[in-house]
Figure 1: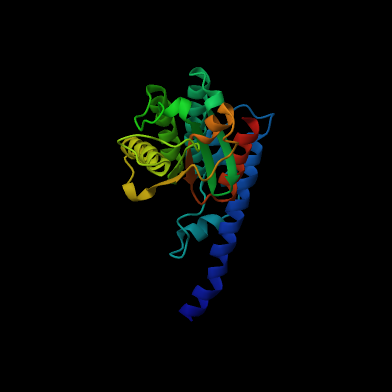
Figure 2 (figure 1 turned 135 degrees about the horizontal axis):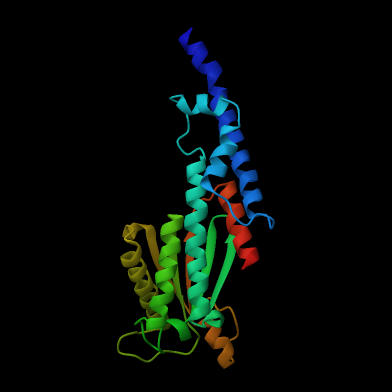
Length: 244
């Protein structure tokens, strides 16, 4: 008899999770709409408390999913991510490096930040420039807000490097990627295993290597911020990129 009741009630948990997620999604749609300029925590709580007792009952169940979106999680997410991305945008603008940095939302689980080496490193060097540290500090705050995994790729142009320190462009790209990863690990205090550094050397160009401008585009560091966002979170990020 007990098992029958448990089985018959289990669908309520799944259903309530779905309803909560849909509520969260449409709530974010409303928050981000042009006519809404302010939103308070109490407003969100009131909206959730107006719903039926189904969600409350399901949340008390031992089978309740702890990852179900709640008003607290929604508010925290919006506040933290908005603040982190806004800080990064402000730093880039104030430092006048908008031409040296690019942000691209590639996929629901990946954001790409590209920094060219006029911002990050001197020619043939793997030592970060002061301005790069300023920008990467804000990138680190985004990583913390998103609680994400990170991959850093080093890329170069096709001009051979002649250096006692680096035997090839592969080595230079790898050293630069490691430098950026080390900075981000220290800044975020995340476990090193959350980060990956790799090098493509000159073998993954985004432009021609026959012009100075093309070679400049190819000399870059790519930072991939990876996280499995849910439907609500994905929508928020997409809107941020559209606005930006």
